[in-house]
Length: 329
Image (cartoon, rainbow, N blue to C red):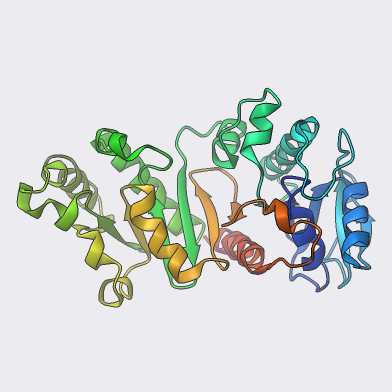
């Protein structure tokens, strides 16, 4: 039986609420929330939810999914009590401890994968802890040299060559070496973690009209196309570079398994328009499975009961599917 770790993220945000709301129904796999039991109990009371919190941990892992109305919890104490909607830098280390426990549990085989609710990067940095995000933290924890950000919703997957860069720096960051590494990781994880035997990947150009034959930029001619051609010679199915304004149309998308976009706001606005609230963030290139919600901490909604569990449910389903695909390959 597979066991999965769930980290609720920022304790003052909606992550704890999402975990508790999710526990109203039985999951198809055993799911362990790595969180403060006291926090979950207090938030359940605030939300009027009668969720039974069942304590588990190393040496006493569950042997099946928790029944509806209950949640397995590996108690991870807060530094100070958390109030819904009120950030407290004293609990920054707690957030990172939950991620560390989940990541190490995946590495040692205790967990088949980890699913993360949103963290608040600002309050962690205000606590004096350098932190740029889940992706970078888990890359360091797992000693992964290159990771790739991919967002997915039903019917569309979009991976990124560059992520959080100012637009003025993007062109210089798209080197042949970087593009090759990212494309290889995307291809390999579509095979190994999604069970797609021969994935077909559409690749965006960087410039309008994919450079218009060099008249609107030469990155396609000098960097992107030679790299794609080299990878094609090894049998990787890469189509492009294609103009991004026409790539994201049914004619193209119905014949591909993923899109590789050159930068953040080239690919993600389309994906979020198609599936916001029902999308998942997947970190590729890790030796473990990690999926996440596609939204933030929503401090103003914490403790209100007015939250949508859709993205977390998709993140869970994706992690379960990836684990099953991995077992088949």
